[in-house]
Image 1 (cartoon, helix red, strand yellow):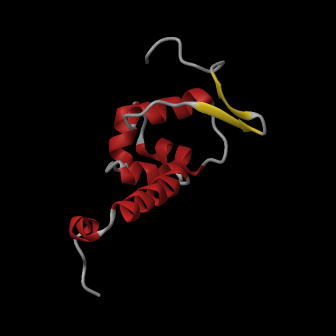
Image 2 (cartoon, rainbow, N blue to C red):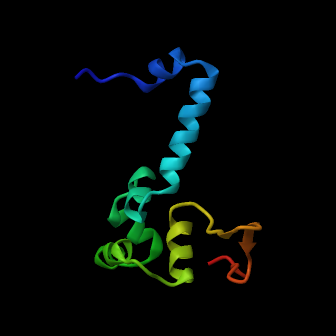
Image 3 (tube, rainbow, N blue to C red):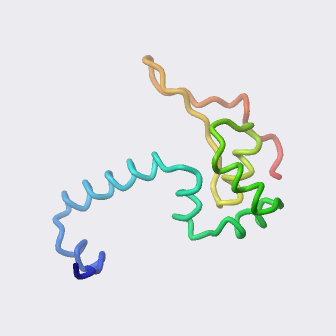
Length: 106
């Protein structure tokens, strides 16, 4: 199968197709595992571990956990260049939970 240049394919899309494609990409990104997020950011475990100030085996363990402290997840997201935001999706609407907001940048 021949590889196709994404920009060439995108240039042939209608504006509606581009909008749909971008929405699908956002949906997919919203469901990634932490290891997949790290790879999408172009980082190795060694890179991210160094940015977090931990050793690579510790990061490997973090990426495979089902549960972790909010502060640990915040450090990981910051090391990826992002900000952690906690949102509860309730029947009445989405609520941004600020109880765990960071008081000082680490």
